[in-house]
Image: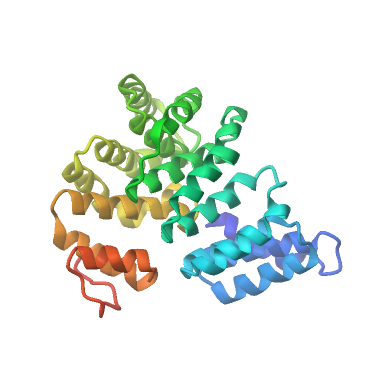
Amino acid sequence: MPWRCASLTTAISVSAKGENYGYVLGQYAFGLEEAGELRRAERVGNAAIDRNAGDAWAIHAVAHVLETESRQSEGIAFLKASRPAWSHAHALAIHNGWHLALYLIEEGRFEEVLADYDRYIAPRLAEDFLLDLVDASALLWRMELAGVDVGGRWAPLATQWLTHVDDHTLLFNDLHIALAVSRAGDHEAIDRLRDSLDEYARDGRGDNHDVTVGVGRRLIDGMLAFADDAYSRAVELILPVRYRVISIGGSHAQRDLVTQTLIAAAERSGQINLARALLAERLAVRPTEFTRLHYARVGGTASAQTPPSDIR
């Protein structure tokens, strides 16, 4: 991805003696993590934190490493200990809290997640910072995938998102609009989103338009189908494009929502062989206890170590 290359190039070209070099290391660490260089990413991210304990981006990069490697307990301790630093970073205060929520969800600590949502995220929705809205949608959706009743939290989020329903600046945002309006049960808003996407597909242009037409609309319609309990339809829409999800933007951790939804749709539609295969694949790269239990629930064996090659 171009922005990752830019992160690496910048890190190489900036002098280590500069006062802002620590911030460059934080950016570099994130680029390394997304490129799969986890050991280097963690080392560089911690070096940035050593230079500046309040570098929320470096903290964010290390949090990504811990999430990718399923080191939930370490992640919880790390982000809780550093919260006094990152909680003051406007652009990343909610997002680093979202990373903390990912760890907590994997450990089944749902009450803590909802308490943090109500304390930190809900009061900031009206500020209309798009990354906060993305994080709110993804967090509530993941909680529901885990079987948690999130109550009436969807409605105010959907209302705020609807002010951007016609923006279409990034498919990644449109996908999260779909999550919110569908789970809020606002059928008029769902129709409005679909109509706006139809118009954009017909009259739009540019890279985001191409991603929307080629991949994004299937993902959005798949999520809408899932929210409407049409699980077979969700699988039909999402499965063929799951290897192209990277094109919508976001990080590995953020796009993992699509995989989690596909697994749930397969299981709920009775496609147990598919669910088992997807979970075996997931277990090989994210061996958490949460995933192990889910895999066992669909008849998987604890010996699964490598992902199957027959998923299409």
